[in-house]
Image 1 (cartoon, rainbow, N blue to C red):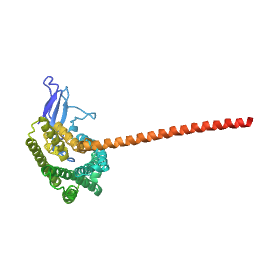
Image 2: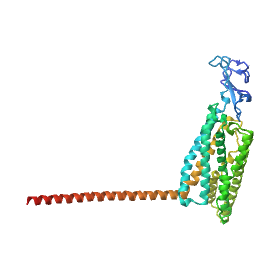
Image 3: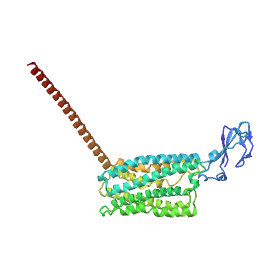
Image 4: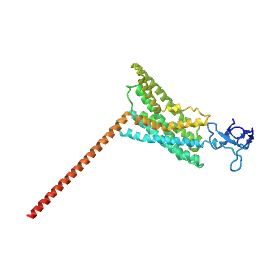
Length: 397
Protein backbone atom coordinates (compact mmCIF):
# COMPACT_ATOMS: atom_id res chain seq x y z
CA UNK A 1 0.00 0.00 0.00
CA UNK A 2 1.43 3.39 -1.05
CA UNK A 3 1.29 6.34 1.32
CA UNK A 4 2.76 9.80 1.49
CA UNK A 5 3.66 12.27 4.23
CA UNK A 6 4.71 15.89 3.86
CA UNK A 7 3.85 19.57 4.01
CA UNK A 8 0.85 19.46 1.71
CA UNK A 9 0.12 20.12 -1.98
CA UNK A 10 1.25 23.37 -3.58
CA UNK A 11 -0.77 24.60 -6.57
CA UNK A 12 -2.02 21.05 -7.14
CA UNK A 13 1.25 20.06 -8.82
CA UNK A 14 2.56 16.52 -8.57
CA UNK A 15 5.68 14.57 -9.38
CA UNK A 16 4.81 12.21 -12.27
CA UNK A 17 4.54 8.48 -11.75
CA UNK A 18 7.75 6.59 -12.47
CA UNK A 19 9.44 3.20 -12.38
CA UNK A 20 12.88 3.05 -10.71
CA UNK A 21 13.68 -0.57 -11.53
CA UNK A 22 12.40 -1.95 -8.24
CA UNK A 23 9.13 -0.11 -7.52
CA UNK A 24 6.42 1.74 -9.40
CA UNK A 25 5.91 5.15 -7.78
CA UNK A 26 2.53 6.87 -8.37
CA UNK A 27 1.79 10.55 -8.92
CA UNK A 28 2.89 12.27 -5.72
CA UNK A 29 1.99 15.74 -4.39
CA UNK A 30 4.88 18.21 -4.38
CA UNK A 31 6.71 18.76 -1.10
CA UNK A 32 5.91 15.27 0.16
CA UNK A 33 7.71 12.00 0.76
CA UNK A 34 6.13 8.97 -0.87
CA UNK A 35 6.45 5.61 0.88
CA UNK A 36 6.12 2.16 -0.67
CA UNK A 37 6.54 -1.34 0.80
CA UNK A 38 9.96 -2.80 0.13
CA UNK A 39 9.53 -5.51 -2.55
CA UNK A 40 10.42 -9.02 -1.45
CA UNK A 41 12.77 -9.64 -4.38
CA UNK A 42 15.31 -7.07 -3.17
CA UNK A 43 16.25 -9.48 -0.35
CA UNK A 44 18.02 -11.82 -2.74
CA UNK A 45 21.08 -12.08 -0.48
CA UNK A 46 19.48 -11.89 2.96
CA UNK A 47 16.42 -12.92 4.95
CA UNK A 48 13.21 -10.99 4.42
CA UNK A 49 12.22 -8.94 7.51
CA UNK A 50 9.37 -10.21 9.66
CA UNK A 51 7.66 -6.81 9.49
CA UNK A 52 6.77 -4.62 6.51
CA UNK A 53 9.48 -2.04 5.79
CA UNK A 54 9.07 0.96 3.51
CA UNK A 55 11.26 2.61 0.88
CA UNK A 56 10.89 6.37 0.35
CA UNK A 57 11.01 8.78 -2.59
CA UNK A 58 11.00 12.58 -2.16
CA UNK A 59 8.97 14.88 -4.40
CA UNK A 60 10.50 18.38 -4.50
CA UNK A 61 8.47 21.59 -4.46
CA UNK A 62 9.18 22.20 -8.15
CA UNK A 63 7.37 18.99 -9.16
CA UNK A 64 10.46 16.86 -9.77
CA UNK A 65 11.75 13.83 -7.92
CA UNK A 66 14.79 14.07 -5.66
CA UNK A 67 18.12 14.04 -7.54
CA UNK A 68 21.24 12.64 -5.85
CA UNK A 69 24.78 14.04 -6.12
CA UNK A 70 25.35 12.01 -9.30
CA UNK A 71 22.47 13.77 -11.01
CA UNK A 72 20.21 10.70 -11.00
CA UNK A 73 16.66 10.34 -9.76
CA UNK A 74 16.93 8.64 -6.37
CA UNK A 75 14.74 6.31 -4.29
CA UNK A 76 15.87 5.56 -0.74
CA UNK A 77 15.87 1.82 -0.03
CA UNK A 78 18.25 2.07 2.95
CA UNK A 79 15.31 1.69 5.34
CA UNK A 80 14.52 -1.72 3.85
CA UNK A 81 17.54 -3.30 5.46
CA UNK A 82 17.56 -4.61 9.01
CA UNK A 83 21.31 -4.50 9.62
CA UNK A 84 21.18 -1.64 12.15
CA UNK A 85 18.39 -3.31 14.12
CA UNK A 86 20.32 -6.57 14.18
CA UNK A 87 23.47 -4.81 15.41
CA UNK A 88 21.48 -3.10 18.17
CA UNK A 89 19.96 -6.40 19.27
CA UNK A 90 23.35 -8.14 19.26
CA UNK A 91 24.93 -5.35 21.32
CA UNK A 92 22.03 -5.55 23.78
CA UNK A 93 22.46 -9.32 24.02
CA UNK A 94 26.22 -9.12 24.58
CA UNK A 95 25.93 -6.35 27.21
CA UNK A 96 23.18 -8.09 29.19
CA UNK A 97 25.00 -11.42 29.10
CA UNK A 98 28.13 -9.58 30.27
CA UNK A 99 26.20 -8.27 33.29
CA UNK A 100 25.09 -11.83 34.09
CA UNK A 101 28.67 -13.12 33.83
CA UNK A 102 29.86 -10.45 36.29
CA UNK A 103 27.13 -11.42 38.79
CA UNK A 104 27.31 -15.21 38.35
CA UNK A 105 31.05 -15.70 38.93
CA UNK A 106 31.14 -14.29 42.51
CA UNK A 107 27.89 -16.13 43.30
CA UNK A 108 29.45 -19.46 42.31
CA UNK A 109 32.59 -18.68 44.34
CA UNK A 110 30.38 -18.07 47.39
CA UNK A 111 28.43 -21.31 46.87
CA UNK A 112 31.60 -23.39 46.53
CA UNK A 113 33.48 -21.66 49.37
CA UNK A 114 31.09 -22.18 52.29
CA UNK A 115 30.61 -25.72 53.58
CA UNK A 116 27.30 -24.69 55.14
CA UNK A 117 25.88 -24.21 51.63
CA UNK A 118 26.56 -27.78 50.52
CA UNK A 119 22.90 -28.83 50.56
CA UNK A 120 20.56 -30.15 47.87
CA UNK A 121 18.89 -26.79 47.30
CA UNK A 122 22.19 -24.99 46.73
CA UNK A 123 23.42 -27.93 44.63
CA UNK A 124 20.58 -27.18 42.20
CA UNK A 125 21.42 -23.49 42.20
CA UNK A 126 25.13 -24.16 41.57
CA UNK A 127 24.50 -26.30 38.52
CA UNK A 128 21.93 -23.89 37.10
CA UNK A 129 24.36 -21.01 37.67
CA UNK A 130 27.14 -22.95 35.91
CA UNK A 131 24.84 -23.65 32.94
CA UNK A 132 23.78 -20.00 32.79
CA UNK A 133 27.39 -18.80 33.06
CA UNK A 134 28.68 -21.10 30.31
CA UNK A 135 25.72 -20.17 28.11
CA UNK A 136 26.47 -16.48 28.62
CA UNK A 137 30.14 -17.00 27.75
CA UNK A 138 29.37 -19.08 24.64
CA UNK A 139 26.68 -16.73 23.32
CA UNK A 140 28.83 -13.65 23.97
CA UNK A 141 31.82 -15.14 22.12
CA UNK A 142 29.74 -16.50 19.23
CA UNK A 143 27.76 -13.32 18.64
CA UNK A 144 30.75 -10.99 19.13
CA UNK A 145 33.16 -12.94 16.95
CA UNK A 146 31.06 -14.83 14.41
CA UNK A 147 27.70 -13.05 13.96
CA UNK A 148 28.82 -9.41 14.09
CA UNK A 149 31.75 -10.28 11.82
CA UNK A 150 29.35 -11.75 9.25
CA UNK A 151 27.40 -8.45 9.09
CA UNK A 152 30.49 -6.51 8.00
CA UNK A 153 32.56 -9.10 6.19
CA UNK A 154 31.33 -10.99 3.08
CA UNK A 155 34.13 -13.54 3.59
CA UNK A 156 33.31 -14.17 7.25
CA UNK A 157 33.83 -17.35 9.23
CA UNK A 158 30.11 -18.08 8.91
CA UNK A 159 30.38 -17.99 5.13
CA UNK A 160 33.36 -20.37 5.18
CA UNK A 161 31.28 -22.83 7.25
CA UNK A 162 34.33 -24.22 9.06
CA UNK A 163 34.14 -27.27 11.32
CA UNK A 164 35.37 -25.32 14.34
CA UNK A 165 32.59 -22.77 13.91
CA UNK A 166 29.94 -25.49 13.67
CA UNK A 167 31.37 -27.26 16.73
CA UNK A 168 31.32 -24.07 18.79
CA UNK A 169 27.74 -23.33 17.75
CA UNK A 170 26.76 -26.87 18.71
CA UNK A 171 28.34 -26.40 22.16
CA UNK A 172 26.39 -23.14 22.48
CA UNK A 173 23.17 -24.98 21.62
CA UNK A 174 24.00 -27.66 24.21
CA UNK A 175 24.62 -25.07 26.92
CA UNK A 176 21.39 -23.31 25.96
CA UNK A 177 19.38 -26.49 26.37
CA UNK A 178 21.18 -27.42 29.61
CA UNK A 179 19.90 -24.23 31.24
CA UNK A 180 16.35 -25.40 30.52
CA UNK A 181 16.97 -28.90 31.85
CA UNK A 182 18.46 -27.47 35.05
CA UNK A 183 15.50 -25.10 35.37
CA UNK A 184 13.33 -28.20 35.11
CA UNK A 185 15.44 -29.85 37.85
CA UNK A 186 14.89 -26.78 40.05
CA UNK A 187 11.14 -27.00 39.52
CA UNK A 188 11.02 -30.77 40.03
CA UNK A 189 13.06 -30.60 43.26
CA UNK A 190 11.12 -27.72 44.80
CA UNK A 191 7.77 -29.23 43.86
CA UNK A 192 8.77 -32.54 45.42
CA UNK A 193 10.02 -30.74 48.52
CA UNK A 194 6.70 -28.94 49.03
CA UNK A 195 4.24 -31.56 47.74
CA UNK A 196 5.92 -34.49 49.56
CA UNK A 197 7.57 -32.83 52.54
CA UNK A 198 8.33 -36.10 54.34
CA UNK A 199 9.59 -38.03 51.33
CA UNK A 200 13.15 -39.28 51.51
CA UNK A 201 15.60 -37.12 49.55
CA UNK A 202 17.33 -39.24 46.93
CA UNK A 203 20.84 -38.75 45.56
CA UNK A 204 21.89 -36.19 43.01
CA UNK A 205 22.82 -38.58 40.18
CA UNK A 206 19.34 -38.38 38.67
CA UNK A 207 19.65 -34.60 38.50
CA UNK A 208 23.08 -34.83 36.89
CA UNK A 209 21.60 -37.21 34.30
CA UNK A 210 18.70 -34.88 33.53
CA UNK A 211 20.57 -31.59 33.74
CA UNK A 212 23.75 -32.45 31.85
CA UNK A 213 22.91 -35.75 30.13
CA UNK A 214 19.50 -35.26 28.50
CA UNK A 215 20.58 -32.26 26.33
CA UNK A 216 23.09 -34.48 24.49
CA UNK A 217 20.25 -36.39 22.81
CA UNK A 218 18.30 -33.59 21.03
CA UNK A 219 21.48 -31.58 20.34
CA UNK A 220 23.12 -34.65 18.80
CA UNK A 221 20.07 -35.32 16.61
CA UNK A 222 19.99 -31.64 15.62
CA UNK A 223 23.70 -31.63 14.68
CA UNK A 224 23.38 -34.77 12.55
CA UNK A 225 20.27 -33.40 10.81
CA UNK A 226 22.00 -30.10 10.12
CA UNK A 227 25.10 -31.77 8.74
CA UNK A 228 23.04 -33.90 6.36
CA UNK A 229 20.29 -31.49 5.29
CA UNK A 230 21.37 -27.88 5.97
CA UNK A 231 25.14 -27.66 6.14
CA UNK A 232 25.63 -23.92 5.62
CA UNK A 233 26.58 -20.75 7.54
CA UNK A 234 27.76 -22.72 10.59
CA UNK A 235 24.21 -24.05 11.02
CA UNK A 236 22.90 -20.63 12.11
CA UNK A 237 20.19 -20.28 9.44
CA UNK A 238 16.77 -20.59 11.16
CA UNK A 239 14.55 -23.44 10.03
CA UNK A 240 12.26 -26.20 11.16
CA UNK A 241 15.33 -28.13 12.36
CA UNK A 242 15.40 -25.82 15.38
CA UNK A 243 12.26 -27.47 16.72
CA UNK A 244 14.38 -30.50 17.60
CA UNK A 245 15.78 -28.31 20.40
CA UNK A 246 12.79 -26.00 20.90
CA UNK A 247 10.42 -28.84 21.82
CA UNK A 248 12.44 -30.00 24.90
CA UNK A 249 12.85 -26.35 25.95
CA UNK A 250 9.13 -25.69 25.66
CA UNK A 251 8.31 -28.96 27.44
CA UNK A 252 10.55 -28.00 30.39
CA UNK A 253 8.84 -24.61 30.67
CA UNK A 254 5.33 -26.06 30.50
CA UNK A 255 6.09 -28.68 33.15
CA UNK A 256 7.62 -26.00 35.36
CA UNK A 257 4.47 -23.93 34.91
CA UNK A 258 2.44 -26.90 36.16
CA UNK A 259 4.85 -27.29 39.10
CA UNK A 260 4.45 -23.62 40.01
CA UNK A 261 0.65 -23.76 39.75
CA UNK A 262 0.57 -26.78 42.08
CA UNK A 263 2.98 -25.10 44.52
CA UNK A 264 0.70 -22.03 44.65
CA UNK A 265 -2.31 -24.27 45.25
CA UNK A 266 -0.54 -26.05 48.13
CA UNK A 267 0.52 -22.75 49.73
CA UNK A 268 -3.00 -21.29 49.51
CA UNK A 269 -4.51 -24.50 50.91
CA UNK A 270 -2.12 -24.45 53.88
CA UNK A 271 -2.85 -20.78 54.56
CA UNK A 272 -6.60 -21.45 54.55
CA UNK A 273 -6.24 -24.51 56.78
CA UNK A 274 -4.57 -22.38 59.45
CA UNK A 275 -7.47 -19.89 59.30
CA UNK A 276 -5.07 -17.20 58.18
CA UNK A 277 -7.01 -14.52 56.38
CA UNK A 278 -4.46 -11.77 56.80
CA UNK A 279 -3.67 -10.08 53.48
CA UNK A 280 -0.01 -9.84 54.51
CA UNK A 281 0.28 -13.64 54.53
CA UNK A 282 -1.12 -13.91 51.02
CA UNK A 283 1.11 -11.08 49.80
CA UNK A 284 4.15 -12.92 51.14
CA UNK A 285 3.00 -16.08 49.40
CA UNK A 286 2.55 -14.19 46.13
CA UNK A 287 6.02 -12.62 46.44
CA UNK A 288 7.58 -16.02 47.13
CA UNK A 289 5.84 -17.38 44.04
CA UNK A 290 6.93 -14.48 41.84
CA UNK A 291 10.56 -15.03 42.82
CA UNK A 292 10.35 -18.53 41.33
CA UNK A 293 9.40 -17.23 37.86
CA UNK A 294 12.98 -16.43 36.69
CA UNK A 295 14.31 -19.55 38.45
CA UNK A 296 11.85 -21.74 36.52
CA UNK A 297 12.35 -19.73 33.31
CA UNK A 298 8.64 -18.96 33.04
CA UNK A 299 9.25 -15.41 31.81
CA UNK A 300 10.12 -17.01 28.46
CA UNK A 301 6.53 -18.25 28.22
CA UNK A 302 5.22 -14.71 28.63
CA UNK A 303 7.56 -13.49 25.90
CA UNK A 304 6.90 -16.32 23.46
CA UNK A 305 4.07 -14.52 21.64
CA UNK A 306 5.09 -11.63 19.41
CA UNK A 307 2.45 -8.86 19.27
CA UNK A 308 4.23 -6.56 16.83
CA UNK A 309 4.98 -8.53 13.68
CA UNK A 310 3.35 -5.97 11.38
CA UNK A 311 4.93 -2.90 13.00
CA UNK A 312 8.72 -2.72 12.71
CA UNK A 313 9.04 -0.35 15.68
CA UNK A 314 6.94 -2.60 17.92
CA UNK A 315 8.87 -5.62 16.68
CA UNK A 316 12.17 -3.94 17.59
CA UNK A 317 10.87 -3.09 21.08
CA UNK A 318 9.63 -6.66 21.55
CA UNK A 319 12.99 -8.08 20.43
CA UNK A 320 14.91 -5.69 22.71
CA UNK A 321 12.83 -6.82 25.70
CA UNK A 322 13.25 -10.49 24.75
CA UNK A 323 17.01 -10.21 24.25
CA UNK A 324 17.41 -8.25 27.48
CA UNK A 325 15.42 -10.75 29.55
CA UNK A 326 17.35 -13.60 27.98
CA UNK A 327 20.71 -12.04 28.78
CA UNK A 328 19.80 -10.86 32.28
CA UNK A 329 18.30 -14.12 33.55
CA UNK A 330 21.62 -15.30 35.02
CA UNK A 331 22.19 -12.01 36.80
CA UNK A 332 18.63 -11.95 38.11
CA UNK A 333 18.71 -15.44 39.62
CA UNK A 334 22.18 -14.74 41.09
CA UNK A 335 20.77 -11.62 42.71
CA UNK A 336 17.63 -13.31 44.07
CA UNK A 337 19.07 -16.64 45.18
CA UNK A 338 22.58 -15.65 46.26
CA UNK A 339 23.15 -11.99 47.02
CA UNK A 340 19.70 -11.50 48.62
CA UNK A 341 19.66 -14.91 50.33
CA UNK A 342 19.56 -14.47 54.13
CA UNK A 343 21.79 -17.48 54.75
CA UNK A 344 24.41 -16.20 52.31
CA UNK A 345 24.22 -12.70 53.79
CA UNK A 346 24.72 -14.14 57.28
CA UNK A 347 27.78 -16.15 56.19
CA UNK A 348 29.29 -13.16 54.38
CA UNK A 349 28.70 -10.93 57.40
CA UNK A 350 30.24 -13.52 59.72
CA UNK A 351 33.30 -13.85 57.47
CA UNK A 352 33.65 -10.08 57.33
CA UNK A 353 33.43 -9.75 61.12
CA UNK A 354 35.93 -12.58 61.59
CA UNK A 355 38.44 -11.01 59.20
CA UNK A 356 37.89 -7.62 60.84
CA UNK A 357 38.51 -9.14 64.26
CA UNK A 358 41.71 -10.84 63.05
CA UNK A 359 42.85 -7.57 61.50
CA UNK A 360 42.11 -5.68 64.73
CA UNK A 361 43.99 -8.27 66.81
CA UNK A 362 46.95 -8.15 64.43
CA UNK A 363 46.96 -4.35 64.57
CA UNK A 364 46.77 -4.43 68.38
CA UNK A 365 49.64 -6.94 68.62
CA UNK A 366 51.71 -4.88 66.19
CA UNK A 367 51.17 -1.67 68.16
CA UNK A 368 51.94 -3.51 71.41
CA UNK A 369 55.21 -4.84 70.02
CA UNK A 370 56.07 -1.33 68.84
CA UNK A 371 55.45 0.08 72.32
CA UNK A 372 57.50 -2.69 73.94
CA UNK A 373 60.32 -2.05 71.48
CA UNK A 374 60.27 1.65 72.27
CA UNK A 375 60.27 0.93 76.02
CA UNK A 376 63.19 -1.46 75.61
CA UNK A 377 65.16 1.10 73.61
CA UNK A 378 64.47 3.77 76.25
CA UNK A 379 65.54 1.43 79.08
CA UNK A 380 68.74 0.50 77.30
CA UNK A 381 69.53 4.16 76.69
CA UNK A 382 69.04 5.00 80.38
CA UNK A 383 71.23 2.06 81.42
CA UNK A 384 73.94 3.13 79.00
CA UNK A 385 73.85 6.70 80.35
CA UNK A 386 74.22 5.45 83.92
CA UNK A 387 77.18 3.28 82.95
CA UNK A 388 78.88 6.22 81.26
CA UNK A 389 78.40 8.43 84.34
CA UNK A 390 79.82 5.75 86.63
CA UNK A 391 82.82 5.30 84.35
CA UNK A 392 83.55 9.04 84.40
CA UNK A 393 83.41 9.05 88.22
CA UNK A 394 85.93 6.21 88.47
CA UNK A 395 88.35 8.01 86.15
CA UNK A 396 88.24 11.18 88.30
CA UNK A 397 89.28 9.20 91.35
